[in-house]
Image (cartoon, helix red, strand yellow):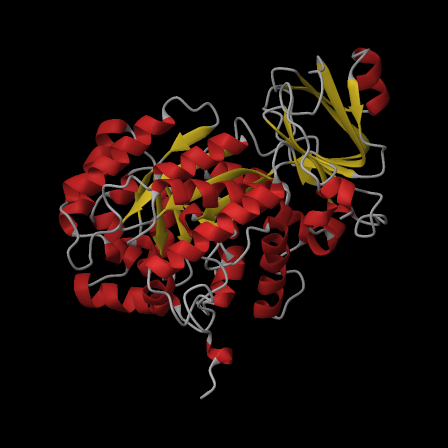
Length: 481
């Protein structure tokens, strides 16, 4: 990226760097609507100043119908809906790049739990801003976040909303409550944070709320019961993790006589709208429960590979008709929020696991990252595809760069060839948030410096020597190794 593009871009009007046009038309060599109109050669999408899509189709017709409209794109790129990140943890924005030699439960003890005892709302907000910029510049317009921490009383999960709101991303946020640890407060403290988070989100136009169950094994029966009761009382949907690792299923069978999916059913959780992260170690009975309860799945291939958790049976879930999206997972278990990397990995993992090149195709995986993710979150009436009447979450991929200069097949080229560098322009709800591959209105150097200092301070306070270079020497620096 050259120095001119690296500099922060001023934010004026609705965020597009200039006057707000009555109509914006974004055109490309291909328009991948991910909706009923399919893929359109030499296509365009039009949306109005209020952020509503008004038309898709032939650029010449849209231009003739909307004289004076702002025209974006030279006709060489690819236009598609903004990507939907179906599962992440914005509380991990400051603790990336640690614990790669751990399985999930070791990783909890080495990385997530120490920081979770100390992190504050302001630190979560800062990490969320940093990761929101990373997501926007990778084409993500909607994110489903589970903010997890053990610093009860700090209301740290509200920081995720603060950060997303400041950057103007669309999202859904929950507090991933868990109370099965020493000296945890009573259920009332966790329920109070759910309520406070719901109240904080109530005034946000682009951010929704879910109740969070951090892990089914990490929540006590009293807190589980109160959470399910609150979902029934308030109509809350749920975000949780299900059947992520084999140890989880084994421990659940020892404790409860069944796996975590069946235990969730017995506790009444699956009576509500649920999206479950991972869903790797599922029995036939589990899959039947998920189908009967219409449980949505967030597939996180990169994190599953880093933590050696296993392979999600995505093709089976799709055959069963389950709603399924793709997530990056948290910044500490993926180490980036690059959704394009997660999309490519999702396809490759299924191919190599099945020894079958048609186990997952480019159109299928891109569907999961757009309208599929929107369906999984219950947002498909508003976003996930480019259709008249929906909101203008729009992504323009640069066709003049080396990655997408050649488009023999736009689906394959995006899934296997695109990188965040390919993302040229991004609109969220009709507001331009990225231009020239750079997030608008962000002082990148200042944000990086602030985040770096906060990450170092958090690592020291959390006693993360041996994991973080900010807290002490790393293994490869030891003289006695």
